[in-house]
Image (cartoon, rainbow, N blue to C red):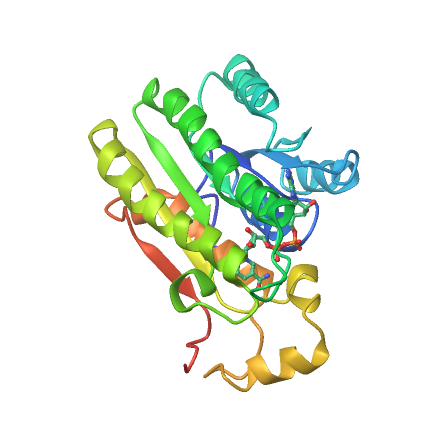
Length: 251
Ligand SMILES: NC(=O)c1ccc[n+]([C@@H]2O[C@H](COP(=O)([O-])OP(=O)(O)OC[C@H]3O[C@@H](n4cnc5c(N)ncnc54)[C@H](O)[C@@H]3O)[C@@H](O)[C@H]2O)c1
């Protein structure tokens, strides 16, 4: 979809971008004219893609490798953006981990790591990003929740709790940051065709698809398009919203 350079002049920071939704978000933002800082934990994983996008869309896609659960690294990354660009317009807290475990088999390391990546790092980057946005008359923060944070799902007590937390923190941050002209929204994707989703196995996948009104998995680009809307001025009166992008799940 070509909607022009609606992010021209915007500086964006996206976490978890070597594949899946994050990779599509980076491409959509670069295509829309944004300067994009693309984070991932896997060193070197987006070098080639970043270079390709920068050339193709005549912009800058800058890889920044670190584990978002490391506080100091988060700080350094936002300081780098400030030094190089003097501002931050858009933050997308996309990176996430998902590992299923039935009640009775859930262990503490699984809880700790899932909350660390999905919730605590999001809170940390939200704070750091908001501080920089405040110095430049506002911005847009987009957090990645999930349909299971709304509906729940057997085997996902831990993961769904992290995604539920994203919903409540998004609503609170939106109220608190509105006076600073910072909008905070979340996207709740349904079943989107990425490695994370494929990890549940073909049998489960078929079962879930039968429960989707549109009868197919979503494409990463369809989440990227929702991000584009929330990142741009097209959504200037939208904040504290949880945008479901799920093909209308039946139950
Ligand atoms: N795919 C779906 O159907 C779906 C549905 C609902 C919500 N989500 C959410 O969307 C987001 C992206 O999901 P995806 O399907 O693209 O996942 P994915 O596993 O395909 O990609 C996740 C990316 O995050 C990176 N990452 C993981 N831990 C990190 C860390 N500590 N620091 C920095 N980077 C890290 C990975 O290297 C990878 O590039 C996640 O928050 C996920 O929970 C996905």
